[in-house]
Length: 246
Ligand SMILES: [Fe+2]
Image 1 (cartoon, rainbow, N blue to C red):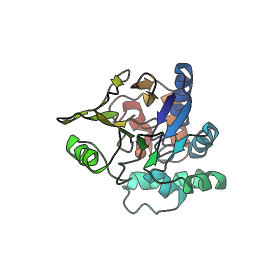
Image 2 (cartoon, protein in one colour):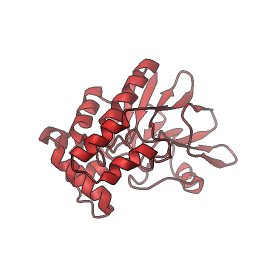
Image 3 (cartoon, rainbow, N blue to C red):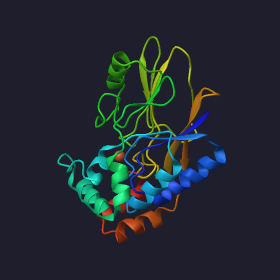
């Protein structure tokens, strides 16, 4: 069984399509989506429709999905994120808004011993970036493998019998073997707004037969995504950052 894991698509249709094309060539059986389908980018309605058509085996909401859907008003958002969320809300069809509004919160199970979460399995809005915080999650919860998003940084926190270590950011092409006796918190990175100074779209494939995950990066037509952002009337900074992956 091969699972395509996508997170933080952020209304970037070109990045989403390029990931799906690359993943189709690699081959996968099912899809898991870790939230933040929308926000920041210029194609929220298109991205929601692409995701719906994928019929994900598991999908959860992200913080931007809540605000764009109108469940929350984004009081805790910075100005850039809030402006983008309000423009995204306007660009959505009623059907797509309903789909977003009904996405469940994480964590959700993916198979028997695997979870998916947006921030962490305990808090959908927490940014998980250091091994100490990961260690608390390993201690407090029972899972072998948990995929999470939200930080837009591809990373692995690995618990062995002795220690918890972090690998971040993880370069594209990295293969992580999944070993018995160890446990993992893994972030695939962001499809639509990478922040590790690699502008290529990020995705990951979990291969349960081979007992491994492989991180992938794929180039996509950034100028096209930038044009959609500018044409939608979104802040130009959101277009500029895509070029540098920040
Ligand atoms: Fe995000």
